[in-house]
Length: 166
Image 1 (cartoon, rainbow, N blue to C red):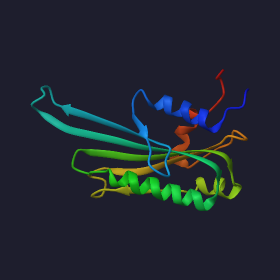
Image 2: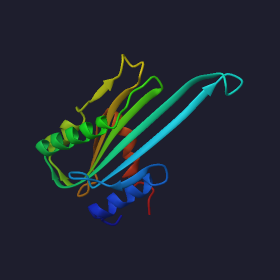
Image 3: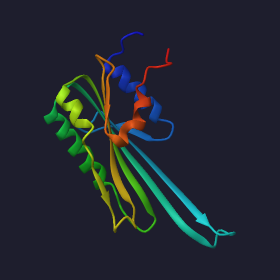
Image 4: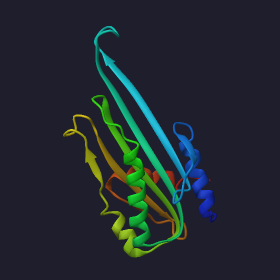
């Protein structure tokens, strides 16, 4: 397996998002941002008998770091959560607006790696009747190939997994 640089890995991850997400350059501290919006309607027999409108959104923030420390991790998580939540507009048809933070770092301090699995952010709107938001978090250490994530971020592991890739 050949060594990939941080920027190459970020480009590969961004490319995997481009088909379904609107990807754009990010504002500091983010290297890039991606948005996904889905609208579904449920109806009974005919369209005029609409039962429900369901909206789901996802806001993904990408970060490149040389060395990820616990202080920097806290700052990045708070920045992603605040920026993502500011885009949420809950209403009766809103199901979920998830926020994801993907960090690609040359090295990750052990304390920061342990802290990642403990990070949990979530918010419900009108007792979940108007939906909810939650944070998915994944950090990839380029130097070792180690992946750290919170419980909801486990699904993000496949983005940087090198198993089966050539």
